[in-house]
Length: 104
Image 1 (cartoon, rainbow, N blue to C red):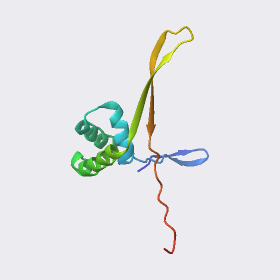
Image 2 (cartoon, one colour):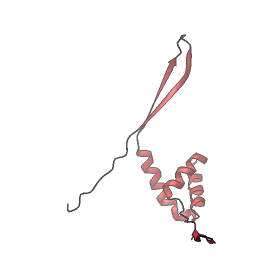
Image 3 (cartoon, rainbow, N blue to C red):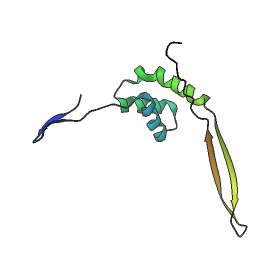
Image 4 (cartoon, helix red, strand yellow):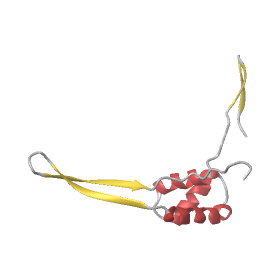
């Protein structure tokens, strides 16, 4: 998987870890707004066939659409009463981490 070469201090290796599907989809979402194109880009980033990741990617898209994101747009005023550019504040619901207790 990784490349190995010799140095005067001994062999050196580079560990190669391909991105996870979630990481690849996040990167692809910045490149294209189209969901089908994002799946293709994620497959290319992971060096996998598109058909192999399509179902998992669609499940991730569905779970993302369930997340609640609220946006508030406010109009700021300068000290002289002149309007400024609008400010957009996004609030994302925090991730809930479910911990399991051993023995239960």
